[in-house]
Length: 286
Image 1 (cartoon, rainbow, N blue to C red):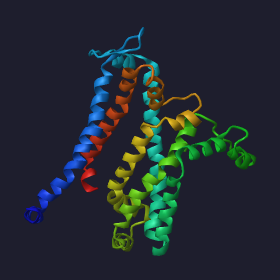
Image 2: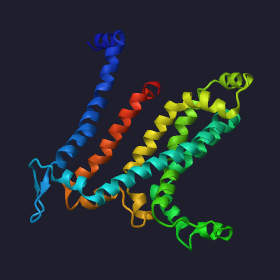
Image 3: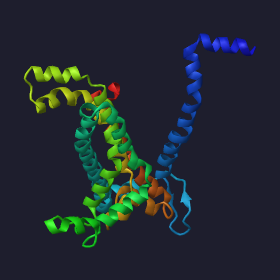
Image 4: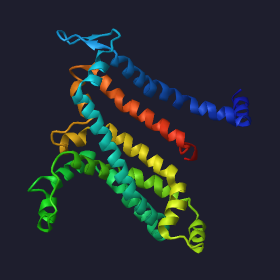
C-alpha cells in the first residue's frame, strides 16, 4: 500500500506539490489572514468607558474620530511622509552600492561585500537605535563632537533623526534585491550601449533602470512597509513626534478597538501601495 502511494505521488508531481504546499497555505490563511480579519472586526467595536470592557457591537465611532480629529490626520501624514522619505533615501543609496558590488567589484570581493551588507542585520535592533541616539544627542553626541568643528551639527531628536535611523536599519533590504537584479543584467547590454555612443547617465536611465525596476519595487516593499509600522525608532530618537505605531502601542492596553482601528491604516496604505505596484506590472517580473 505504501509503495503504491509513493508511486502515485511520483507519477503526479503537480498533485505532490499541491500536497506539500497545503500545510503552509493553511497556516498562512489561519495565522495571518485570520489575524487581519480579527483586527478588522475589532476595529468596529467600542469600549465601555466605565468598566473598560469591549462592547462587541458594530460602530463606526472609531473611524469617525480618526477622520475628524486633526491630530490623528497629522500622525497619518507624518508616518506616510517618513516612510516615503526612507524609501527614497534607501533607493538613492542602494543603487550605486549595488551596482559597484555587482558590476565593478571583483568576483572574489562580491561575496565579502554581500556579507558586509548583511552584517548590520545580525546586530540587535535596539543596540543600533541606541547607537544612533548616542550619535544624534544634541551638543554632546558623537556627530557634534566629530563634525561640529566644521559646522555640521546633529539634527537632534525628531523627524530627521527618525528618517536617518530607519534609513540605516532598512538599507540592506533595498541593497540586496537591487544587487540580485543587477547580477542578472548582462554586461553585453552595457557594452553595447557604450559602443553606440550613449553616455553613462543615459545608459543608466534607458538600459539599467528599466531592467532593475522590479528589484527596486521589491526593495521598496520592505523599506516602505517596515517604516510604516515602526514605532520603536520614533520612541527612542523621535523626541515628541509620534508615528502610527506609537499611537497603537499607547492605546493597546486601554482601548483595544481604537488601537485596532489605527492599525488598519497601515494595512490599508500597504494594500493601496501593492495595488499601484501591480498596475505597473513590476510584480510579474519578480
